[in-house]
Length: 414
Ligand code: HEM
Image (cartoon, rainbow, N blue to C red; front, side, top):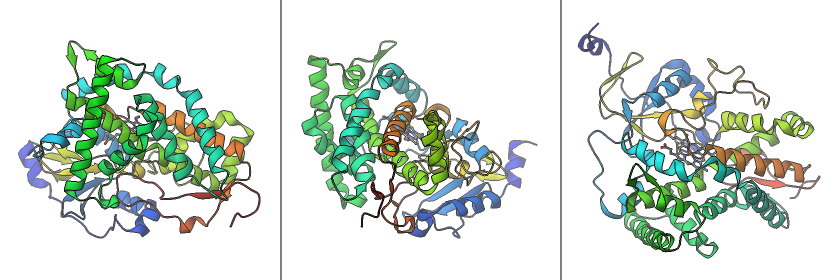
């Protein structure tokens, strides 16, 4: 059948509104809804709060296919990048780029973000974890998000990049303004001002490292060269901004969601305590069961695409739901069950294809040290409130708790 006849037979899906993917109830437990979406259709159109239609893809096989398919691209085909200037200085990163730009940017950072550099961080990650817990334990209850999950990866990425300690709070404020300006009450111009300050700050750091190279990732990025090619200044600032942003929003949720899942499954925790060599497979299972990134970042159909009997038109916005793929019965046995000994765990929590998470080895190491130390150090750790009272951040990109209060003693801490 020719392409024209094929498209003639395909009906263009009308967006469906029966799922409220943005309500707090949905966020509290999105998995039954995703299971229903997987059963019903391969593609679901949904009108986002800003009026755009987003096509959600929820089945494992389809999610994997989209992530590997070069027809789904990261730059909108009818370019909407009409915001030159300071925003370009944080948006020219690999996650928003297609080949050949993506290939070049990733190759340049790969030289700097080496396994050796990541492995060498283990003792520092352990020390930071111990220090954070030493401080946290002085309070009657610990918030695993504010006291451990967030500060640990932020400190690690700042140290890796060589951001001086005195600047970290300010850098953190800028990073948060970039990620979620809405939740911080920032309007467009306030955000733009912060972005401009951030970019000016980074420019000074780059100039400093050029003049006085140090043993940090920023120096490595400034010096990185691939076949005579270097990062431009806006690519450099975009790269550092991307690493800082991912440092703020992802690993925190591995620690938060992972701790919650283990606290709710004492049998699995008992297995881990009896045999700490299970931590590696436990981290993979926690990533699958309730991973930090709920949907991928946006992709656009670069051309008209016949997708499982549905027509996605050129320019359509598509999101694959990693959290749904990771609970698909077609791939995982008893997917709603947490099983830290699960064999052959092919979860998609870090994505797939050319944009597969660059920071995966670091995130795994941080998660293992943080959760391993937490549960070893506090054998009586328990939730300070019933799980139903916990609240989740809104938005479909990340999946994470606002707070996770726990107690370390045998009795209740309230
Ligand atoms: C458990 C924690 C983390 C999870 C679950 C996670 C997940 C992901 C996912 C799903 C993607 C692909 C997104 C897409 O294709 O739309 C991604 C990309 C990326 N991640 Fe992570 N991430 C984590 C931690 C980190 C950390 C700590 C860093 C850096 C220090 C990092 C750096 C990156 C970068 C640079 C990309 C873009 C790669 C590319 O476009 O080629 N991530 N991550």
